[in-house]
Length: 263
Image (cartoon, rainbow, N blue to C red; front, side, top):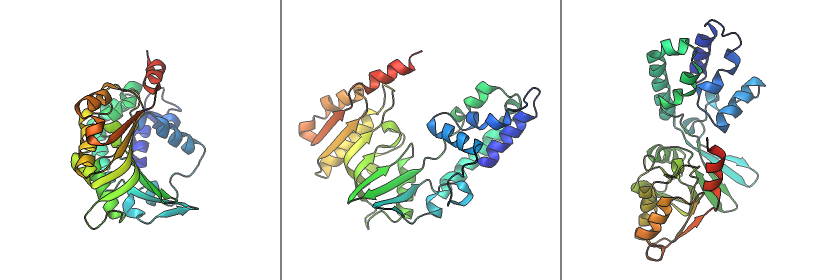
């Protein structure tokens, strides 16, 4: 990713009137959000990125062993090296197909580049402390996550695992998980961080979670960050009393973000 960013920055720096643009180019290259801003600011003040990982890339293949900090044990479970190599190939193809637009130094084109290619592979983490465990999945895909869990040696003999808390991948999108995943990776509590979008989480994702738990005889809690229509539909079509789940909403979150992000 660093070589790709440099290639884009070099293309911009050769355009008329582009003096000084290279130092700030990475803010537009890798999408928006807190993570990108943190990375760019770290580079600007020479703070090392991901020390201890080969090529500054967090990868489960290169660090399958646990990291222990006092009572906390952390295992990287994604992305895999194959995920990153696939991402690199797609980035290179995108660059080859968009050389002219890159050279134009169009800031709108660059800032929207993450819409034309796949998002960067999420860093996924399994953490344990004082007998409790949590699986943080970012925006990763469940098949990639299962590969990473296997590489890290966290799956049992049947290829399954259980945690106390599972952060549901990608705001509960049904494109990032399957019912099979929720049958293999189980939890006491499912947390769905659904940002401000009224369609997150997907109803099918919620159904997969509660159906899998019922079929396995488990009682679960679902915690959602905002009260959206799909949660109400779940309660109507899959009553909590019949399916053995508790649904908790964080009040006010959805309306707060609608206010902040309104044009």
